[in-house]
Amino acid sequence: MTGPPPTTPEPPPMDAVLYEAGFPVGLLTEEQRLVLSELTPQELTVLLDVKSRLDAVGPEVQAHGEIAGGALF
Image (cartoon, rainbow, N blue to C red):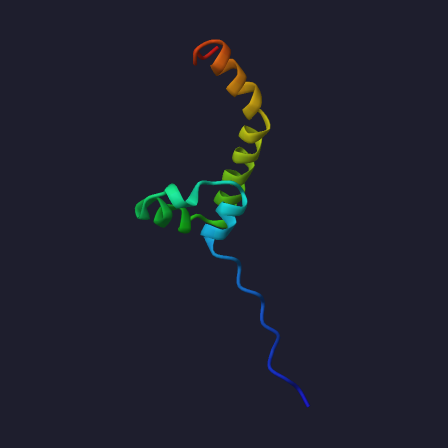
């Protein structure tokens, strides 16, 4: 006897993925959430990669901002 065909699990909602990645989802407007919900998987991958690289240098960038009064160099 065979059962129902296996189902592929649904991907988590975009808000959950972004929240898990550290995006301030609660501060986004509905319009911003709509734009993000329409990202392709490839676009999401790029966005998350850029976010992780920015986070990796965050303390260094923040320290420069505090020391130099926010000047960019």
